[in-house]
Figure 1 (cartoon, helix red, strand yellow):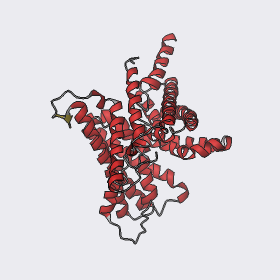
Figure 2 (cartoon, rainbow over the protein chains, first blue to last red):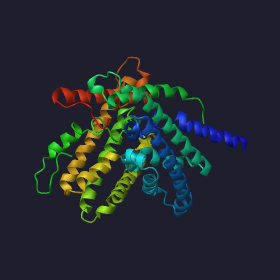
Figure 3 (cartoon, each protein chain N blue to C red):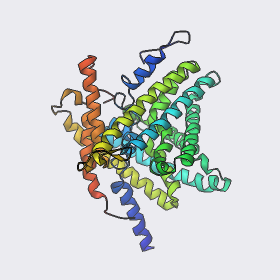
Figure 4 (cartoon, one colour):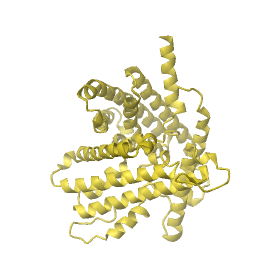
Length: 197
Length: 214
């Protein structure tokens, strides 16, 4: 039991920091650069994102193991996972519009884009590829979500300052954000080798 | 989109392609579908293979959507487009797994993730769903060739500086810059190239710089 917990903890740390989705696996970059301009939107996005990620990881694990494997249609996993994710995103979109219209107004565009986001579809694919069990899949989902939130919040706090900096004109906006990300990613390489799974 | 072509209008195919590569380059100018730009570009072979996969998917999706455009109800068009895209991605995924085993081990996940590319859905929605098959075909070719060019350019610099080789053939005899093949190098090279493309736009085309949504 104890070793099992340790294993889950390692998985969590690996997913959130060592193999951080943004800085080492390069997924979800569109959203990462899109919403990291302001702290407030970054936080809203991280929360939505983590929630969507965990639930879609759980849903697709259930579908994969109880429907697709018995029916031997695992080759359709891309089609089915994107369907599950899109349906769930649509649902959370509706809920968010009712519960928090202000946040919805700000994140509306990106919420619509979330179903075409790489991380959300990558998590179920990796879970299926690595043959994680249900708890491991959930842990992986939470870890990835937290890792993404971490990246988004670090970036947002830097970019708020960057607005005031005197950047050469061709580099204003996106290019300087990329160069900054490169520096953060360099720092994150320091985590590699922390845990060897 | 500035250029709204109707069905009867004569369309300059060459212009469509040039536009896709330079003025509306998916990665450097529009700044979408970025994930693979860094993930697979640590060597030229992988960058090129993913680029080719994207060209194939984009062209096939555009053609399919354009053929089916009169049968798709506007209300449910997005899910239908997603279905078409994921179908073609599955085809590419299986082809790659069968014929390019070595590369598939490294870039397989990113091949599957083509399904989530905003650029592919965008071209299907903006162009293919309103135009006939031949223009749609060339529009798909143009926009995805821009992507291929971007991937090859990024991976060219990363492999040359990071490993001193190109396509696995060693050509530089100096000590390589390790940072270039690390994840950080991908962000750095892409950022610098993006700045370079902006500079070209400002210097020669009188643009305002600020490429992309940023």
